[in-house]
Length: 193
Image (spheres, one colour):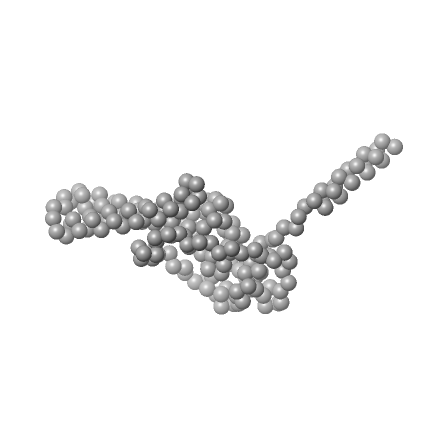
């Protein structure tokens, strides 16, 4: 008799656990929601195979980080054959852990270059910042190092006047702008980026 009540309690407990779990959206739901919301088609999928721009914009565009667009995918994905095919093509083409954080077609396109630059970004940063901002911060960090090397090389040459000083001055300004941009992204993350 005891065994029977134990089995009943286990079954009842499992049934209760199943009922408590909320429905979770899958990666397919998220990508399919973007496909449907933005009417993405095979031309978009073809853009995934092309090279993404990985250059920093002019200094003016680095003044403040770009805001991430809010996107809540539907609970259930009901799509036609074409939308399903585009969704599956995107899932195959962009096979990295940043895709679940994409909130726009542009972010889908930036998943691969961002992941190549830094495969260790945290979920907070991915959820908070537009992927373009994160990519620019990664590129800016590397450019700062390159500019520092050029700055050191100019100092070693012994810059005295005219052209050399103007070069040093422009390097210092560019490094300062890039540092401020990277710092603004990191400060929004609470110190890590």
